[in-house]
Length: 199
DNA sequence: CCGCGGATCTTCT
DNA sequence: GAAGATCCGCGGA
Image (cartoon, rainbow, N blue to C red; front, side):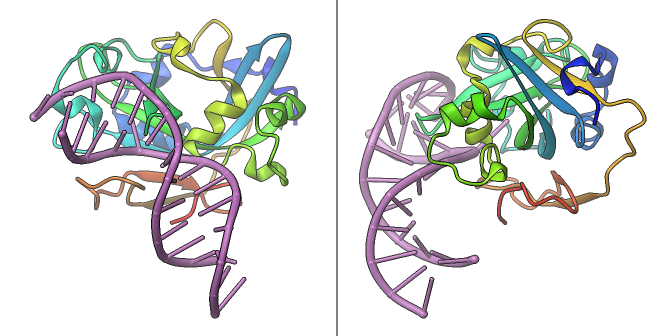
């Protein structure tokens, strides 16, 4: 594969669609983070959509608050929050400005900067365990609250597309680890990939 | 491989 | 004041 960090950045129009379309289209795309001289990159292999209406599991369901403000803003930005008081989770904002909707990045296949990722995940053995969970990938990439609202079309955190990459085969399941709206088919993953969370 | 429980803290009720 | 969009280590099969 070509250098992932040099691939084309996805434009804002990529994110300015309905949330499910964005969640599906993100599979196979590349997250690139430049931090402290390191360039880290991973291929998105698992996502979940959190909708703006009728989705009780979505943080935006309770309305626009200090925490969910960015979800109601323009697309192509990052929504980062702390889960269970310990783990950061990374989401990308979808839909046009004013309409809530975001996509949780649940798993990455590490492509580049693996040594830098391992430095933050010292206990991991296999490469595929470095970022195969929403809390694991933020730790591996060094993502935290400083990235709240970050613009994904420019800056140290970007999402890119390898040209001429064929679209992956997508599998659909209910979402993981939620208590409400739990049966909606809003989890998407690349069918043949090993670096995805369990069911 | 599978199930269990503890850690830890922000946000909204 | 309780509930989380989780992870890890432990013990057992």
